[in-house]
Length: 131
Image (cartoon, rainbow, N blue to C red; front, side):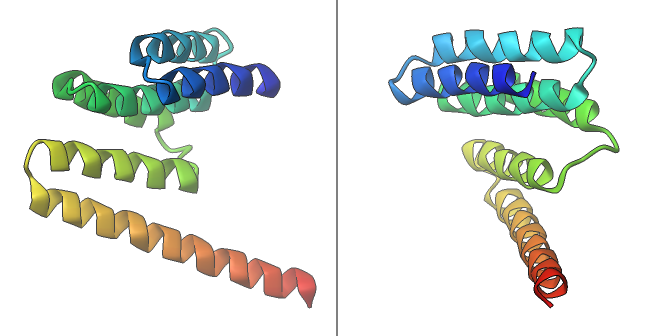
């Protein structure tokens, strides 16, 4: 399952990189559908989060904010730290595009604080494992 999801997201990334957002969106929707059918909200959320980036790039701000809200709902309490940081990054990008620079800065600082906290956790774990 993990391999299939990775392939779907890689294909979407390839299309996005070559400037074909509609095709990327198609594969991300396939990933979302896969997450729904297997009842894995984390996969659904990852697909939705990546679709937000596509929508922001195409200037579809209303669609992007709807997808952000849906991704948040799917994540719920099972928020993985890096997914949460990515979510904050996208909220900041949305705020930047809507000219709400103050909110964008606030969310960016929150994402940075989360990354710093994760970095500290990794250092503590390294110290614990390495002795």
